[in-house]
Length: 513
Image (cartoon, rainbow, N blue to C red; front, side, top):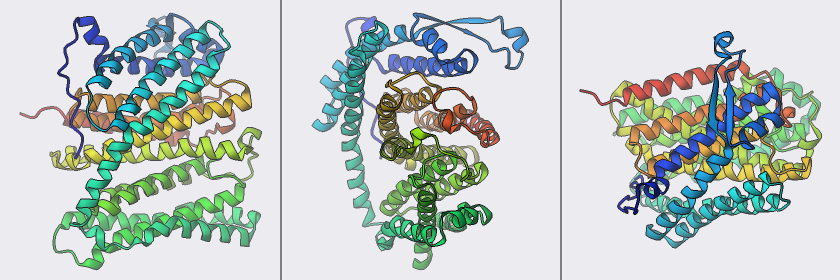
């Protein structure tokens, strides 16, 4: 079951203290940060990264002008919108962290590890804001303060969420004895190893040149769909039929899912051999890797639950990522930028943040399925069953993405001489982190009901698309080595469809007479 929202029975002395210590203030600050990061990324393409960074992150008041290139730009380009700059938002965040952190740590029950993690998150964020202030004043200690504080935040997130994830695992283990999952074979645990070994052997035996040609001509990136698709259909059929299903039919969809993971793992191993690097060198390979991570997480949950819901999500995560990779296409003739050739940081940073994207993909899929169920079946039964799983998946995505952003800062310091430069790609990744944090705060703080939580999780798909592919189409920033126009239409179509689904979910969430 999903944890109950945090109690709000404490009454501070004044309305001002009550406002700054509440999660409502936290949501406003996170929303303001997301807006500033987005507008700064847009203006980076118009005026350059340095000018945009000074305008939004170095000024108390930021002025945004409606772009003339946008619809009705010839009329609305005279519109200037004043916004609070990042220093003002940071000052409000500092007050919120100090007041809210003290009150929540002091009153919060639960495991000691979780309380220590919460304290580390708050103190780390306060330290990061102090590092930002030192940066504004040109202090050389800003870099060290920011790096140490960001590391404390990530470690605190791991400690904070570990007790709830462990408790969830114990609850599922108790349910496992009553479900059909105990009869499923444990062979799926070896699926990634088996697939990776087979793929590496195939690539090495054929040679890189022949394998690259075979990969493109035979559309090998679609092979796992041949198993993911039937597995999804059987999961759905078994779910609809309910009782009286033969044992072989109960086992078959999970076996097909395991086979899909074998083929998916083999594809990633082939890409490793062809590039000589981890399979996260471009949009094509990173899409396959993120979907593989999402499928593995969901398969592990399906092994415990055995109700078919997580199995369906695993098939969708794997299959949709393969479809996206096929649409983007693989280009093995493109030379890699020298900075990407750093195997150590490619494994640490890119694989970590791509794993976070994979968890985010899984969360978005779970949210989309529950919204569709609400629209067409007019009930929240599925949403209640998946709420706990979705909450844990969003938390996992937050931890992995935040860790990936931190590791990316360390890599940038070694490669470019600065930890953070307000690059559009960096801003977009931080936007996703802030939105995931906003989603968790809104739910755990009791500001949104179940339907609202699902809609917020579904909106994470738009931030994921922007972070992953949207900024790649802008053509500015130090991350230009990853820019490509191949996924422009795919990104646009997904954004429109996902936005339409969220709007339909909002309409369906209205109280019915």
